Amino acid sequence: MYQRILISTDGSEVAQKGVDHGLSLAKSVGAKVTIVTVTERFPIYAGPDWIPGPTDLADYDARQKEAATKILADVLAAAGRLGVDAETVHVPEAQPAEAIIATANKKHCDLIVMASHGRRGLGRLLLGSQTSEVLVGSPVPVLVVR
Image (tube, rainbow, N blue to C red):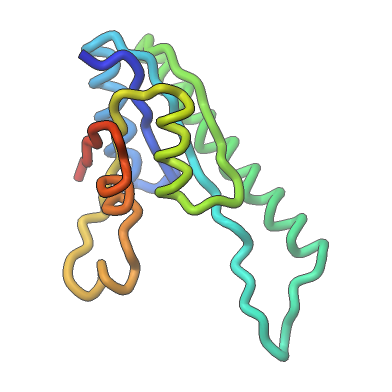
């Protein structure tokens, strides 16, 4: 059925549901897994009171890399406990939906598994939905876990 499954996570409690489901599915069908986390660009809010300096950017990048390393190590350990063959990918300074789709393409994944916060109405319009963007842009099936 599926040969390679991409599982996306941001390390949140909601994302963990997608991770757990994706790893279980991979185990049941004997698929390999690519686990991806994406860290976004430094949020620059230019204004008269504060302009980020080079150390601000470097500190932000270091914290994002550290967080991504922990997130991916935790999921890789969970995959190992289940006996699922897995690799990890951190995509820094990117828009999450675009990076998830690009990683799925690059790694030749035939399924993307991700969680959704399940926002509706105004909250969804204001906050956007990375899951919705992946659903619209993905050339492969997307399994959304709630």
